[in-house]
Amino acid sequence: MELDSDKPVDILKLQLSIEVNTMISVQRTNPTAPNDHYVRMTSEAIWRLTLQHRSSEITVQSPCEGFTQWIARIDKKLLSVSWDWVRLDDGALVQPVPRIVLSNVMMVDAFGCDRGMDLTGAALQAVVDSTDWKPTVAKVCWSAVSKNH
Image 1 (cartoon, rainbow, N blue to C red):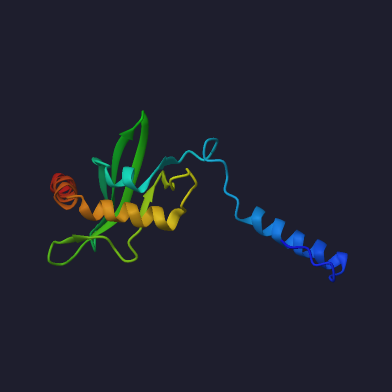
Image 2 (tube, rainbow, N blue to C red; image 1 turned 180 degrees about the horizontal axis):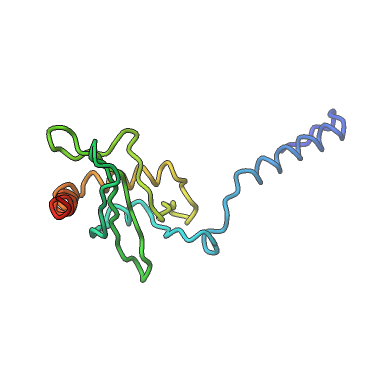
């Protein structure tokens, strides 16, 4: 900030206060000491995830709806990725709209700062889209239905 000798001191103090408050408001928490239990990963690491099926359940019989949970281990940390699904009349499994992925993953940038849940969710949704999850969910859920009938 350049000092303008023609401006009153109060205006300069106000400008400095605004600049300091603006800088403080965009500071991110220290990524090396978070206490929120997220597994922090870069987008590249998220793309390399190999998810393994943990469980799937039917929560509503008609229309047939449920959720599925998939896991991975990264550096001795367990991460979980789950999403809802619905079975259409033609038997196809899809994610209901809006497509939401729940996880304990937080995407970070190259400096280790959190990228936020929206970007993390979008990256995880891309991983889900590239995962062949539908046959596994169908097999687990339909075998459970056949046992109950």
